[in-house]
Length: 269
Ligand SMILES: [Zn+2]
Image 1 (cartoon, helix red, strand yellow):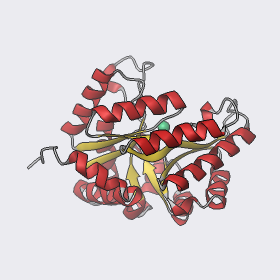
Image 2 (tube, protein in one colour):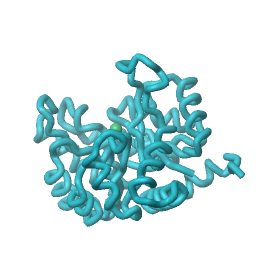
Image 3 (cartoon, protein in one colour):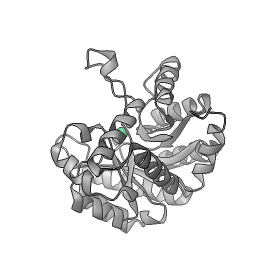
Image 4 (cartoon, helix red, strand yellow):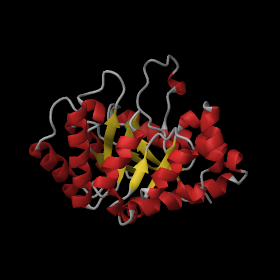
């Protein structure tokens, strides 16, 4: 079984989510964790997870969505969603984004720190985003003792050295489809210990791609796994079992929740 540890399925209709998950299940991707980016999207993601056994959720405010200072009200809203719904497994998507035009940095730092505090408060792992902000993201994670809950650096595109820093922080690197097109990332991924890697697609509707079948979906986790297997000269089954064991380590007690919802899934044999 594969797990897609980071997607955004909340913009899809319920019917479409059902189809996306069906296609994922057909290739062995049986558990999918959808992240929130705002209060509304977190709520929608949590609601969707209640409808589909293999769908789980994160709650969080994305750094690109920090349009105003993160308040105690926001903290309590996210906290409420997480405590009232057992399928909320992670605090996600949070982090720092220093791309031109990104929200005010002071507001981003504050929101990131507050949401790490939330994760520690809830004892939930963190799935974080970092764009042009790795050193600062790592510093904040260290200062806020994120290692107490651990988690995942999502959409990893760094080199071997960055991967080592992520591991030293008590986090896993999450590989997605950029692996299929970036030679430097392929070179790094060949060397990153399999014990430190999880998989994701960051799937979200992509209307800018004219052909619907080209939209990234959780089913593509298998493609990433196949390529990773090739790069590391191991079998795809080995990648499958290692990455699933790794996300299980990330989720801790949350894995029991995943397991209990998946028990109804027919085994491929
Ligand atoms: Zn994302």
